[in-house]
Figure 1 (tube, rainbow, N blue to C red):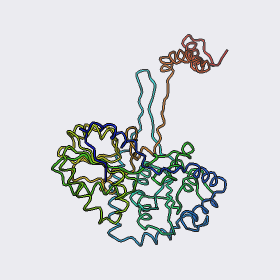
Figure 2: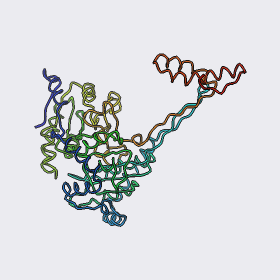
Figure 3: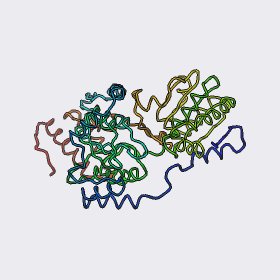
Figure 4: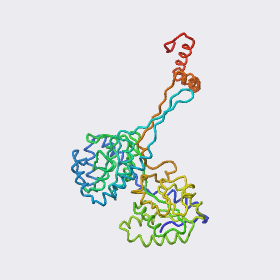
Length: 445
């Protein structure tokens, strides 16, 4: 049974904190195993990648078969049904249009002292995109990772997607084609992350790695961070729904179950001031759950991590949501815009009963790679900004240096960094000599 809380309970705060601190990730420590895999791939390259792929994915590969060939890509794409192609193309077009609006502008201006200042944006040269291929294979994840990278201007896009037993999802390959991916490798796990970060004879290293994966993939991303950039360490998925009485309980139940079917560690939370609605939703979950193809997974998630919270009003519901900082937040209320203004921490917000989170997973346009495990308190979902770098620009005229340089000399002295101060004061001395007509070639005397 899911956890049932009301804010009127004397022990609510303690029980709510227990819910927040519950560890939903796989408790097994994989760090040592991952470190060994990464070290092995660094040392033996393609040979190590092939061995781990045979062991974990039951697939025998060689350096010449690590990547999908153009003919293999064409053959897989040809297997896609026209209706599926149309749906994936619609999703790609909407995701591309949304992310194109995120592109920032370069700036350059001259301030009153005569200093020219600004910044420019440039994309990373190469990005590695990890696509899960274990319990489920997600073409939507290809689009959500690759399209923002391509919009940002990344020059080389590489996808790693495991194909256990050699089974390929043609929609994943089509998604790679639609998103403009350059290379597709049939490898996964920590060995794929290691190959992307350190490179092998066959796989050139990248500058940034994005995309979700299992505990081994997450641990591998932690290990290689610093050598390459990463997007985030993704944990189990989660949704929090704030609802009021006039909402459809069947729809709410389906939204909760849509999250629960992702993973047995996923979490679905309903927060409402209406106890009758809460009971109706729970009854609908009980009715719908047994007929789901992934009922075992969804049932485990709902049983172990499902939560119902009864609040005094919607304002209290919003305050509790901010403390959870959910990955996905649905506002199934009559005035979602007003309630949205009370929310600070959420990866993505879906406003109104006609905006199910599941649509956002595919075709709305915003990215579905979002911060989990309360990290929405300090981070954002994947965007073009994850594939861009900002470089600051500055140019001083002699007059600008004369205006602001003395303050730099003073601050350098306060910090005990004499060469810093001399670097500026030598130029100021030259300006002073020029103004007096004596001339100088600068330098220390």
